[in-house]
Image (cartoon, rainbow, N blue to C red; front, side, top):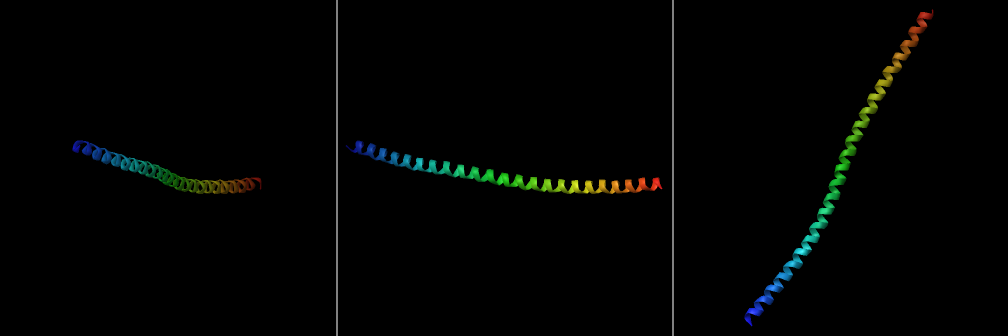
Length: 85
């Protein structure tokens, strides 16, 4: 009878251990999913910030180039008017 009691006790311990492991597994899966989502969001924020900086630099470069072109156009018109005199 004692052997049967030991097996029953061991079975009960194993069942409790399995339940605890399954609960931990579910919790870890949930945590990992949330962490992956957070990481994706952080990576997207970093990428958006980087792109924003690059776009702003390109806008500045475009404006500078347009200004230079505009100044050449004004000089060109002034030179043309000088030749016509």
